[in-house]
Amino acid sequence: MSNEDADDLAWERSAVVRVTPSAKARKLAKVPFVEMADGRLQGVVSSGSDIARVYVSSIAAETHAFSCSTNNNRPCGGLTGGYMCKHLQSLVAEAVLQYGNERVGQFLGIEGDDLNAGLRDGSKESAPAAVVFNRFLRHLAYLELPARNAPVPEMQWFPAGAVG
Amino acid sequence: MLSMHLAALTDGLPDGVDDASALVDGFDDALTHGLGRLGEPQAAALEALAAALSAAPLGPAIAEAAAKAGSGSPSEDGLGLLAAGRAALLGAVHDALLGRFDTAAGRVRAAWDEPAPEPPGGTNLLAGARSWLHEVAVTGWRGVGHDLVSAVDPTVEALLADPGSRRIAALMDGLAAELRASSPVATMARVPARRWGDLWSRPMLLTWQDGASGGRAEPVSGRLLPLGVDVHEHPTAVQIQVHGVLESGEGKRLVRASVSAGKVDTIVGPAIWRLLDDFPVLLAALAGQRAVEIDGMPLLPGGDLLWSEDAADLGESADPFATARLQLDEATAPPVPPLERHPVRIAEPVLLEGYRVDGGDLVLDDHRLRIETGNLPGSGPLTPELVRASSTCVGLVRWDAAGWSLRPLAVQAVVKKKPVTAHGGEWALGPTDPKIVKAQAKSGDAVAVLRERAGRLLRK
Image 1 (cartoon, each protein chain N blue to C red):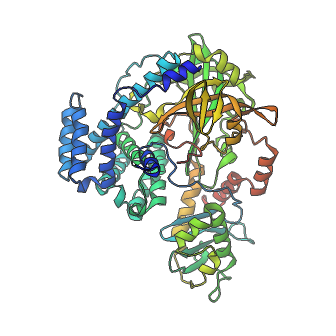
Image 2: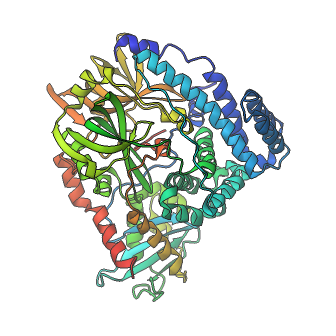
Image 3: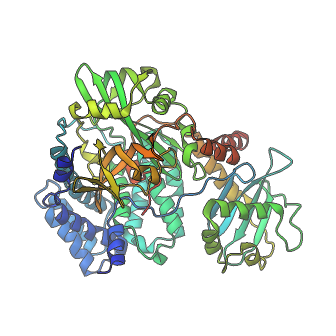
């Protein structure tokens, strides 16, 4: 057995290994939520002018079709013609900070390192904002869970910073 | 821990550990493959697991479940039995390894008194979780894709909202996050079969036994001397587990205090402490290396304090290295509740002194122990460089497929000819390293930003 095979076998037989890299710290003020889920890079971008308004922006993997609207489904004024608005640009930039260029590029199906160039083939589409917005609310709800003082022995499988 | 202790610990594996692990590997391969489409080798692996347990009370039932699964139609009850069989084998491995540690290190451990059984919770939520776990097992990890992962979302959401189900909720949420990031699993180069087997069988068992607290808590009073803190986190949960020595009328005992909170993936590193600001005394004790005066705090038989700020007062300075040097050998270790017995649960505090670090190993005389420099938490000041430069360490002895290892909680090192001491919990009230303070100021307060967004958007 080669060293590499032996390493693979030990990895497969270990209880504590890192399956996915953890997200990197980034400024959350402008783009509080980014995720790669349901075949889209999607997220929520806070409005620069109205503190109570947010934009829901998304880019489909492979086709790169993009959309941006408020959480009440009002189209984004910046999304004219075939160009991405500043919300979508922020979404991509923050996704790169959080996941790294490589993972984002892989998810979106872009060859090469230049994501912006790779996304130029996309065109505007309308995607429902409600689903993504609800996922954002669900995300925020984690912070509302009351802290607990009883042990959760199962967290032993998730040591901070685990690598493997 | 002296070099002779280390020698006794690492002198081969206890009998039976390899055999039991091989049986679990067979089960995990079957789970990777999918119990709904077992080939001959996988069916044989399930039979072998059942055969090894034939003398156990559940033996005949497990044999029947294995036969049924082998024929391609496992029932939910049958999968529960197979999960119990797998857990029994790993429980035996745990007992052998912990026994080896106790003998090697001279640790005295109290005996477990089986508490009266508690009535099962058995809510609809748990039935929902069980049915998803059944589907996953039938499909096999290799068949898991986005649709199957998303199907568990409503169940996890409901479990999270139920305070009594937080254990299973945190576990299934962590598993779902890994599966989501790995979907479709068929494209993965390798599957973490043991890990996912664990993360599947524990919740399967919890759907029958969740809420079982591991016995009745008794109030204790005395002085808690913290040794260090172990941090656990996945994208949506964080737990800090403080290990310490409790001095009370009944002598010295090793105890742990664990507090946990919900989080999101963008809250990482030193920001996690902010999520635990309901526990100011505990955090202050970690940040300042102080003792805590405890008055009537509940303690579970497994050695877990149910942390209550009302029953805790910040005490005098208490250097964890001094505690480890003077108290650790005299402290009685708690027994491990049967349902928690699994090698991953082994986390025994020790003090190691006068060693050198060679590659990834700590070396004391000729004896080596792998030191976990690759997974130091970002929430504290411990770095691989610091650990490599250290010669004294308070840490946790752990075990995994690669053997015994040490997870450092605090180190004393010499860096640029100056002595340096670093404790993992030093930043519990905020980072003390100017570089980290600056980096945090630049990225802003993630917890505050998200709480503001939640306040504005969630309650509309």
